[in-house]
Length: 164
Image 1 (cartoon, rainbow, N blue to C red):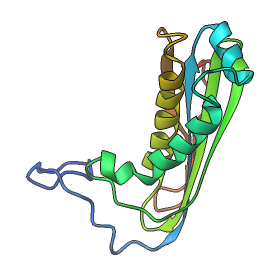
Image 2: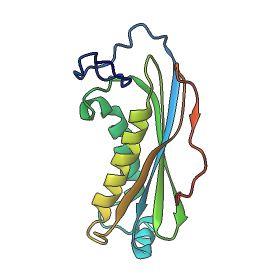
Image 3: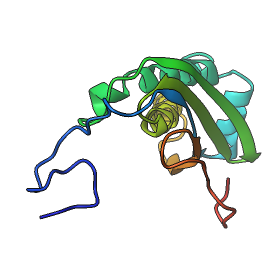
Image 4: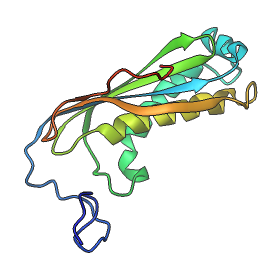
């Protein structure tokens, strides 16, 4: 039984892909997520009035830590020696925080999962720090925006109708 999915062998068993023969190259991935909330909650975050502290700075650190621990969370991910992880925030609407992460590595496999883990952990941290004020927050649109490097080349998400 042959599968086009690289994390399964010919018999269908899960496996960690052997990247030993791949060339080491610079690889970059950019991901994003959105946390929707009440405008009053967003005002608390922006004004740094959340009792637990500066939500965005804690979320930034959490996102970086999440990227660094991706291989501990996703069973078939390779542990990577990341060269850089950046997490940033913007406010596309009065009820939303957009989180973006860029992960870089010089290695044999890509960093898409690390960038996605960074935005997800940062979004969960925003939720955790603000849940006392707004339990109805929604984490949405977690997605890869761009990746470069490796055999599959450059990918950029095209424009669509999403809110971010």
